[in-house]
Amino acid sequence: MAVLELRKDYWILETAHSAYALGANARGVMTNPYWGARLPFTDDYPQPVDAEGWASFTGPEQRTPEEYPAYAGVKYSEPCLKATFANGVRDTVLKFDSPRYRAPHWR
Image (tube, rainbow, N blue to C red; front, side, top):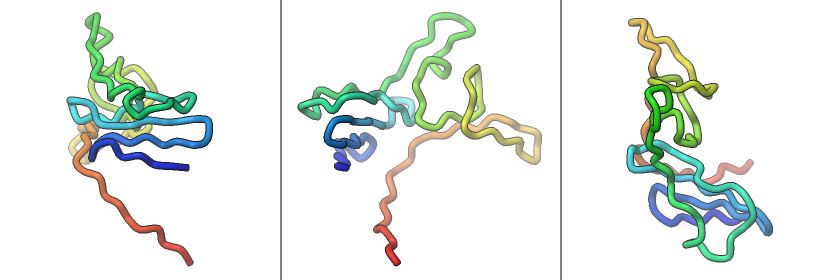
């Protein structure tokens, strides 16, 4: 499997026949803009989505295909992370900061 880094916040994972793209959108939210057949050129892969809302109950948070959605704001999809803090706050907003790479640890 090849991992192509197009920018410091956008990657494409490719196998012989399939591909998966993930990256941070303009709001710093990690999204998965593509999953499907491997495309011939890296420019063919879509950029990370920053969706717009179209109703009071369907805001950008609801329509953005997040890579790892947390429980916060007006989202009605099932979160991957849900926490209640000591002060009673239940919103967790995840934002992309920077990539950190670690060399594989083989035994």
